[in-house]
Length: 257
Image 1: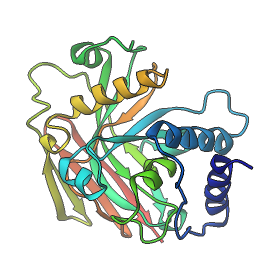
Image 2 (image 1 turned 60 degrees about the horizontal axis):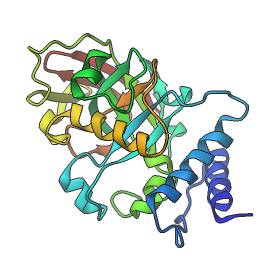
Image 3 (image 1 turned 180 degrees about the vertical axis):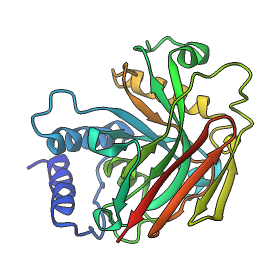
Image 4 (image 1 turned 135 degrees about the vertical axis):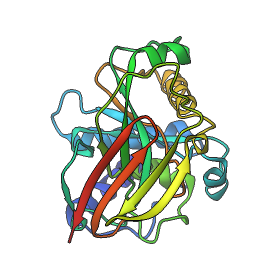
């Protein structure tokens, strides 16, 4: 069994048994490319016989402060499958390991986007929705202690994304100057600006497009792109969550025991 297969097997076992790992041994993986190969094999084995399991991507570490915590100078991405993407509903905390809460914009890709596309073309071929991301990790006591290698190998700590109602963006909407407020059981618990996301969430999607192109991949019609949190994440608790975004409206979900 190769080192990649060993890591993927341990991650699948953690999912199946709902038991966190103490760590992931990524020694010997000298490049991010090799770590993304671990992620890709995990998605293939996790999804079984599904012909096209990739339903989108989530972008992590889109803020310089968070990058510094993980000793890197660039974002990373994780892969979304159908079971990761929700439109609403009630979630059980028992289905997670050690979840956090983030509020971010979701780019809904309307048409295939070529590697040569600029930011204007990406925007023209996208709708944008308000959303939550619930990062979750298979490694115990993970935030902010895991390595960048562990982060990528564990699918960039992908948990769930909750997607609100998308709209077409016009030039009148300043993506670099928006804000969000998050409420838990009616009490405000977080707020933040869109500039927290690489100065503009669209910049994060451009980064993703270029990163995927370097790996022979691209943004495809129907994909959901979770573009990065507006604030530093906080622990998920039981209760009702609601995020209110400038221009993009509201999105909500509930967590039960």
